[in-house]
Length: 543
Image (cartoon, rainbow, N blue to C red; front, side, top):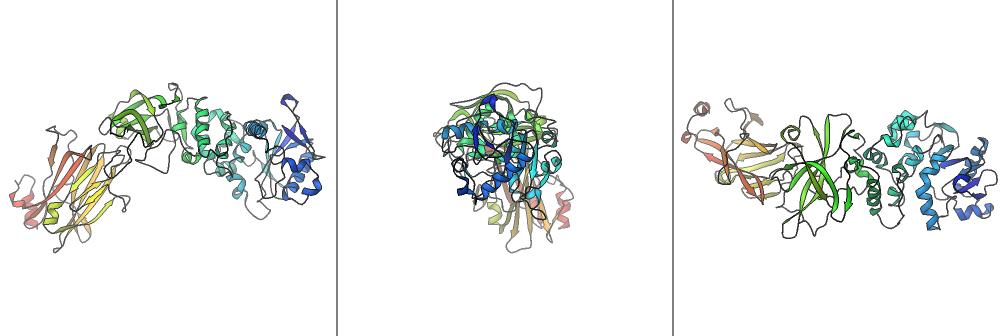
């Protein structure tokens, strides 16, 4: 490594154990930085550069503290030499770790100006390892006034960066923190080059790899492969993409930002640490799995990690890949991350079985594109209301409980198909509001999906509010529906709308777009034709 003499500002090369005691600078780059070639040339030519003034002030502070040498990344690496640059980046964590003191220079923090916690220094990718690796870190403002040390500012730094106080005080080490937690600290940080988001994390995970500028996000993919070679930590797969529910994903993240919400995930200590590896068929790993939906194409795979503050377990939702003809390949795509708590139906109702999996990266040659007729997650639900249209009703509103603007998979005249949801982790409720074109009669149908079943309910509306039926409070499919010739029927009692009119709801287990789901049919009937076994005559009399 090259070190800068704090008196003469001359560079000297040191190798292995010959390295002297030195201080090291951590900073954010500006427009007038001094390069390796600049510092070896006449200093008069660069004396007006802001970067040179920063170097002189750093050397003056280090000299006052008794250091003969200092290391500064702008001028102590020959970046025109690709071999030297690669060596420096792969060694940088160790260089910061071996320094006696690190000077963190916050150029944008001024007395009575920008606050410490708002500094750009905390948003840069490279400064994460520069915060964690050194034994001692001292923070300085733009005038080189000392702000404090990493130890004295530990609680404030934890709030800014998410890095725990224990690690900042060196009471714990990086080995005490899982992959997902470390990745979370790196989320939302910026680097000038996209590849540096991965290269700046090499030392934090104790891995090395060649630098290939121009490879883009593939650098982060390669980083995860290197991490995989050194650990059995499943939290490497505990990330969340903004492209949620239903989009095919690989098992590895494409950016550290996908770990933004993973700071509270922890490894399950004492669990079986079976090996896993990346092969030409994807990630080969054995995980406890349960089948979802039709029991073939969708699975939930349990990871050996949990949420720190919950009695829970983490897992990934998988969908089986198919060839262009629609046949199964025996390989899976990752859909999204799932968090199961003890009150989840999937926790109590299923017994996971160890399953050898191959989880692959997306490739349109191996799986059809998602379309209006392709479903993933819970069973699709079709509602047929043609009979209501013929009787003068119209669908006035269609909404999902938490998202009034939710999209549907298919909407035609007289019927609608809901987009399926992850019903095990996220119960959903849809509302269909109907209003007669010529009368004041209106009602809505509430359909709740949970644990592979639907709970349909008809609610009368009067003066803008739902009217509770005095006889029927809830209409729910039985826990176990009797099996028939591929279709199972369950008919709700009628809900009387007015004199001479009642609405009947029938739920059927049916095949919808090639998936096992539910078909709900709404019909208008004369309530007098219905056997009075639910006290309907009393309701008719009231109307």
